[in-house]
Length: 337
Image (cartoon, one colour):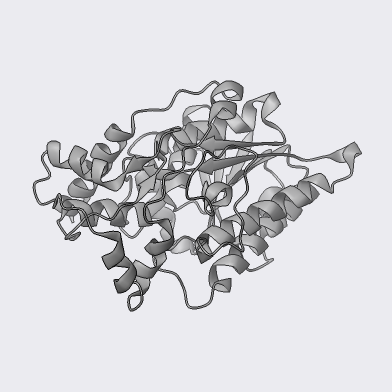
């Protein structure tokens, strides 16, 4: 039986990837920064499938210990772990360093262990963050010197470029394969009890009425279960080697549209009032959370996902259902707390 190492196993995307792998007959080794979270991940996975073929190991993006040992009995690597925050840190290297160093640490260990293929979780943040209009695709790269780019977006771009440099500089006689998934805004059912994830915080605050107004933000969204399916397809599809795959609906969705969908689904606390962008820009001068949103205000950039659709034979699930199920799962967790 083939085994897959999934890094950052306690994360929103990683838990769904683990479930997808187990359902398709793979055994899985999940890495955790703290082994105290093993039971939490097992409980999340057991809501969807059996966890008997799931094991864990301790790895840290910023430490060498354990990486080579963790890879030795694995056939594939899904490198999902990466720092994500809503509020920009004071020092952008708090995001850039673990993203880049962790990616290279994982790739070096995978190469030494003879891993067949690595699937790297990147983001559309590495594709089009500098763009305010136009259409992006798998050939587009974020300009990290743009005034519109946040530290998180810069970290994803730098980390993914480092991965491709590693891939392209290999000895062709013994080349480890690489495919990259670039998800948009990831929504869908929350499996565990951890409500601290960025996507979950946004939905939770929205349905609880904590957004007094809705900012003019648009994102190309995707259901987290689709992200997991695409990771598996990228791992197993021969033609996926050496390619980037945009994992998102091609058309961005405005946050006000999201609010309307959730309001229509019965979440009555949502305030359907649009926030003037000029006002948010003023607030951003004093508030870090608002400041991190300012570069994205009024931006509308469609994604050409045709390579993903064609090579990975993919049709996206409806984004509306992803948000509704995300909201329902948050309510269920709160009710059982």
